[in-house]
Image (cartoon, rainbow, N blue to C red; front, side):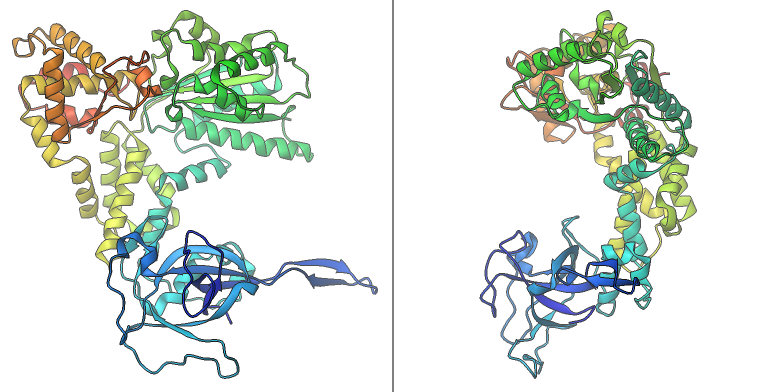
Length: 611
């Protein structure tokens, strides 16, 4: 066994396979060996010289290979004949295992042609298995990647190894080998995923690009709130979706945690005098707004109980809390707080009231993030007064901002994209409400298309155009362009609700939509929108639009947070939510050259939010 060997690995019953496979009487999986190591420690011997002593099992990093039947899309493929070698499929999934679980060698071949192969070691009775490999499957993406070259099988393994990529000392012992042309494209796809970008944001020690001013404002507030028990403890952040609000806060929290560690170690900086714990509550992920109480209780490690009991328990805790210098401060981030609005604003009132009570001052800091700048104006004064005047506004990204962010995020993979392709993607993303996530989506999809074509190492402007045509679906745009008066009224009313409420990805109740349509039609005063449709007519209209894929209708078994926001909090019928499949920019663009232009301009014209 050596680096690069393909082996059979004994395993327990796992997701990779449950059935025993021949020729072993045990569960086993094929894999490639990427790295071999053993833990060691340094100590002094009798001569007081430092020696290295190894301990524990010899460990092996492997890259798993799969049988076709382990992949859902390949389960119905015909098995190999008696005159062909069985197939195994290459993956990018790696793990660390003990060398004691290695069973036997596997010989890989480029073609399935059966020939005279070695089937047994000359000095033992351990069998040598023979397979052919010609396909590459990614379990993380749940899809096959373009046909890999068999000659670069081992080089790809080194590329996916976590240990070889993170250790320069290990890399120095590995002979450098040229990576396939599509490796840079794969790296670009990986760097443009939202999860990868989010992780990079939290680990960076500098503010987000084009967000230095907002970073400094939030950082100053949060540091003062943690250090000083009597400073402001409520903060409001507003801005359009995809403008870096949540990422900026997570970046600052990570930075403050590092500063706290360095201060304890004697670092020369303004000390963070008290420890703090961070709790993130996303309103969109809650089943009900009142679930926020239980989420905070669990985040503070105070147990779990029903929402009503959790609210009482938290109230008692913050009333009896004191501003002792040694007490840990709880920093709560209420993300997507638009979904926590209730008819009486109970949840938001409690969260922002606790920090200003006599006991809660100095124990709790609350930061709220909303997609609408005027959310506080639409709430009761009792809530807005608790938050105070501490607020920060995130303006939408412009073309230059998005282009700079895309170039920074691509980093070493920037050469994969043509310069014009980056600029075109930035312009398109800026036109969609300045959402940087759309820029990532466009560039990532273009790189994936280039990968599927095979033999290419560049993303061109044509790839970007192809992706944007899919995003701005031509068939849907054509339907909206030829919409009837009441269909256009539905589109504009839904887009206007989405624009005003900030419920990104959420839905709207049918009665809420009908009320909006009646208000829009009356305000326009145009005969083509009057009289407004009845409720029964609206149901038929929405069913036709749903069949065309322009709206989505969803009815849950019990009321959810989104339905509470849509006015369905009582659980009464109809509890159906209506969602748009197109953004308000696309609706406005499609209606621009129609008889409904005035309607679109009045309710959808201009930026998503005016600052």
